[in-house]
Structure formats: C-alpha cells, structure tokens
Length: 350
Image 1 (tube, rainbow, N blue to C red):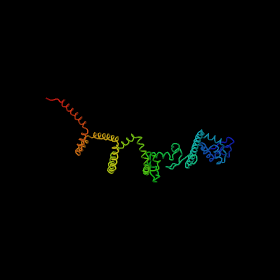
Image 2 (cartoon, helix red, strand yellow):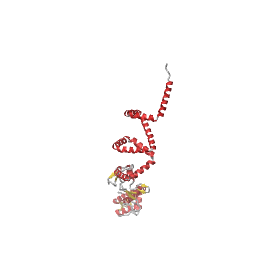
Image 3 (tube, rainbow, N blue to C red):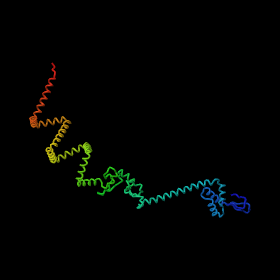
Image 4 (cartoon, helix red, strand yellow):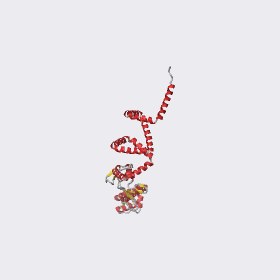
C-alpha cells in the first residue's frame, strides 16, 4: 500500500495523517471495503446512496454518493450503461413474475368458481357421464337448451364407445351403448330401455293393440302399393330358400285349414260370374306362362295325365264334339282345303 502527499484540506477515504502532517498513510480494511462496494455498484447490486450508507456502517466514516460516483467513473468508465441494461432486465423479470402470479391467481379463482356449481346466473355445469364441472361453452347446444353431456363425451357417444355405459330402466343392468337399439349413438343413448327389454315391450303392446296395427298397415298398403311390391320382391329374392322352407312346413302342419280356405274361396267365385271369369282368365295365363317356361316338362306331365285318365279324356272330347258340331265341321273343312292345296303344289320328279 503506497503513501500519498496531502494536497487539500480534506483527508481522502481510506487514508489517515501520520506524524508528518503532509503524508497520508493508507488503511487497508477501508480500501478493501471500498473496492468491494465499487464492484457491487458496477454490477448494479447496490445504488450509490445504499453503498454510502453501508460504508458508513462498516467503517464509521462518511463518504457521499457523489464522491462514490467519481470513484466508479474513474475505475470503471461507462459502467452506468451496463447497470441500466441490468436494471432493465431485472425490472422485466420482475414484471414477468408478477404477471405469472396474477395469471395463477386468476386460474385458481376460476378453478374454485368452476368446482362450485352456480345456482344463479349459471356459468358452469356438471357432465352426467364424466362427472366433471365445466363451463357452459363446453356443452353442445340443441335448439335453445344446452345438453347434459360435454363435447368430449358427445364425440364418444356418436362413436358408440365402450367407455360410455348406461343403465336400463327396466332390467336395471348397466350396459354399453351397443346394447341399446339405434343406428346412431345418440339415438341409443337417449333410449332408456335396452334392446331385449324393448323387444318385450313392443311384443306386449302389439298383442294389446292388434286392431290399431292392422288398420294402419291396411291404410299404408292402400297408399303405397308400388313401394310394397318392390320391397316384397326384393325380400323374396334375398330370402327365397328360407321362405319356401317355411311355406312347406306350414302347409304340412295346416292342411285342413288350407283346404277349408280354398273351398270357401272357390264357392265365392262359383256363385259370382264376374269373379269366375276373372279367375279363368288368370288361370289360363298362368298355365300358359308355366308351359312356355319348360315345354318338355309340360309335355311329359300331359302324357302322364293322359295315361292315368285316358277314358275320362276321350269321354270329355266326345261330349265336346257333340255339343260343338259346327266348330268340328269348320275345322275339318279347313284341314281338307289345306291338304288339297299342299298336294296340288307338289311337283312330280318324273
């Protein structure tokens, strides 16, 4: 540590007067404290006024802040620019932390508000499925009112997810949405009865209200005959074998019923001439079409019938000829004329 010569009246900080009044001796502890404080001022940890107070407490000597400013300017030129930057950085960091704190407080308040269901001026709602309290905007709207399930659960309902389960009001069993009837998941969710219970209910209702169903079906058939024909035809083509088997079994079991019905129907036709003529026309058309479809089968059937009932057939033909002799003679004349024409047109080879 070097000594200094006294220039003015004031004794500089960190020095003392010796025996000779013109020479100043350094005080190591004070100079070291001053050095540390200057570094702190440069880094921006201490302000000039704070530094002067700390020096006064530690050394019990006064040092003004303007003097400290001169000292720092000598030792660290342009130190204030760096300090300003550091101060700005610190201020921004503090502001950022403040904003984060404010946001956290707001979030906590909102969570508290969400967790408590509001009775007046409704803000939130509890989802029936996930049992979470959410804001009203997370609940889809149907017409005017909000639905009781949130958007996430709504998507799962549409997909018929296995996570969503429902209790049947009749059998009291908890089942997936696949257990409830409806092509769409929403329809399945809205139904209170499962498929099995729904089928039982429908069957019971049909038994009790058979007249209503019959009247409705008749009216619908009268209004839409073409559509019903198409539907029946389509269904018949798809399930032809099943229907034929069912018909065969039913005919076996209920032979007497079928005979009675046929007899009643036939008696009605016989008594009414118009119906009888219509029936004849239909039967002729049907037989003709069936013969044209498979001619060989028709011929074989005719032969079999003729050999079994030969006498009946001959008698029937004889009776018809007696009653319709004019037609027989006309046909014979035509046949003879054709035959003569064919023989006259023939040319001899010699």
